[in-house]
Structure formats: C-alpha cells, structure tokens
Amino acid sequence: MNYRILLFALSLGIMVLQACNNEQPTRVKHAVVSSKISVPSFNADSAYYYIKTQVAFGPRVPGSKAHAECAAYYVRFFNRLGIKVYQQKFKARSFDHKILNGDNIIASINPKEEGRILLAAHWDSRPFADQDPDPKKHHTPIDGANDGASGVGVLMEMARQMAKDNPKIGVDILLLDLEDYGQQADEKPIPNSEDTWGLGAQYWAKNPHIPGYDARFGILLDMVGAKDANFYEEYYSMHYASGVLDKVWNAAAKIGYGNYFKFQDGGGVLDDHVFINKFAYIPTIDIIQHDPNSKSGFFPYWHTVEDNMSKIDTNTLKIVGQTLMEVIYTER
Ligand code: AHN
Ligand code: ZN
Image (cartoon, rainbow, N blue to C red; front, top):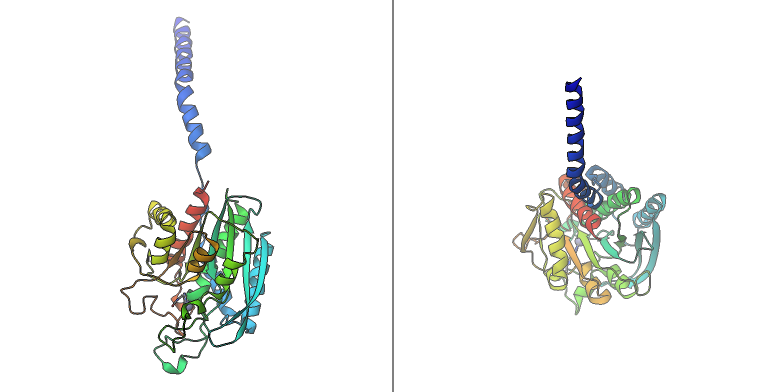
C-alpha cells in the first residue's frame, strides 16, 4: 500500500515538473509552427507538358494560326484555374515595316492584395532562325521551346500551384507578345534597332493593364529550360534591381541550387525587363541563360531550328520553378 502511495506521489511530482517545464517550450514550439512557411513543390513534369503543348501549336509567330490558337489556350488555362485574366491587344510596327497584332496576357493571383510581384516571360517565337548554321534556314520560323515557351511553362505550373495553395502576396503573371521580332544587330543596322525587340513589353510598360499598376519587383524568365543551364547576374538586372537579384540568387542557394545561380557577371541582354525598368519603373531582373564567354552568349541553339522540345530538360525547369516558388511563398 505504502509503495502505491509513494508511486502516486512520485508521478504527481513528475507531472507538476513537466507542466512547469512545458510552459516555455510549448510557446516556442507553437511560434515555430505558426511561422513555418510551407512552399508547395513545383512539378517539373507538369511544366514540361505545358511547354510541349505550346510548341505543338506550331511556331508562335505573329499573325499565324498557331499564334492565335496559343493565345486562346493561355486564356482558357487561367480561366479554368479560376484565375483572373486580362487580355491586352495592341498593334506595333516591326523593323521590317509590318503592322503586327500583339496580345499580352496577364493572369492575376490574389487580385485584391495590395503587395504584388510581377512574373513575366515572352510567349511569341522568332519568325526567322537567323542564327542557324545553315543559311537556307535563316527564314524558317522556330519552335522556340526554350526561347519563349520554357518561361511560360514554368509560370503556368506556378499558377497551377498558386491556385491550389494561395500565397500571401499578390502575383501577376505577364505573358508578353512580340518580344522576338527584333532586328539582329549585325544585319542591316538601322538607327535605334534595339527598340525593335520587346515590342509587347514596351507597350505594356507604357500602358499597363491597370492604369498606375505597381509591383514591389519583377522577375522575367527567358530561356530557362535547357539542359545544364546556368544563370549569371545579367547587367541590366544588376543596374536596375541588384537587391532583387540577391533575393532570388540567395533563395536558390538556400534550397540547394547555388551551383546553378552564379554570383558572377553575365553580361548585358536587351530583353523585356529593360523596358519594364525604364518605362514602368518596376525593379525587374532577367533570369536568362546567358554567359558572355559562350559563342553566341546565349544557349547553344538560340535562334536556330534546333530550339525544339529535345533541348528541354526537367532538371533545369525544377531548379528555376522551385526557386521562384521559394521567393513567392516567403514574401510577406
Ligand atoms: C538582343 O539580341 C538585342 N536581345 C535578345 C533578347 C532575346 C531574344 N531574348 C530572347 N530572344
Ligand atoms: Zn529569341
């Protein structure tokens, strides 16, 4: 009997001790749980499929049936996810004196949220493979699996994840048209030939889908799907938005992709982000496969007929997509 009472007293004592002890750890533990951010997993196979679907329409060259069909596909895609879509139709003059019909598409996640992040990619593909080793192909339109479709495919998969599991922040996905109809610097240069690139970005940055539109920062994706791609610090991104570059490159390092996002000079690329910085004043970086020490500076099949699905690699898509998910879901 005495033994039982002793046991009872002992266990009571232990319980009291535990209760006192528990006070602090419980609260700390609770705080950790409530501030723990869970970042959804980016599915690279899904992104790959969205790239394949775009490419299957045929080259998304302005004025073509594939171009019109692909634009309609994007609008359907976002609508089905219940994401608000804006379609911005515009006209622009090309360097070869054509009036082109352009179509920028904007998908807005958490449209009422005031704090916003802009994610952009161009969706058109270049009408001429003028960097192809075979001169006979210089007038052939390209698939643009990497140059165009890859960035959009990553953003579509992010949209699918964000529709399931809303981030805290507002996100605008900006699909830009008429990026790749520019005049090559070494071909019959005309004055101001740099302005012949990024016609959709120039239009949007001067006429945003919502007047006075603003975002904390912007991230442009261009050629983010090729095997063994590395991403360097692009010059204009450094110039206009070095803090954004740091944020994204650090996010990559944090989740183990530091080897792919190099804190090294990548040279300058006149891409859509330059116009967003210049005309919309949103600090915007370009994640682009561009290494000034390579032959063209760009990925090896840049503006050739070989920029097709065979060059797309799910490892690269995962690295870029998961890094962006980390950035979006940790933004407060
Ligand atoms: C220039 O060559 C001046 N800009 C290239 C931008 C680009 C083309 N990005 C993809 N295709
Ligand atoms: Zn291009």
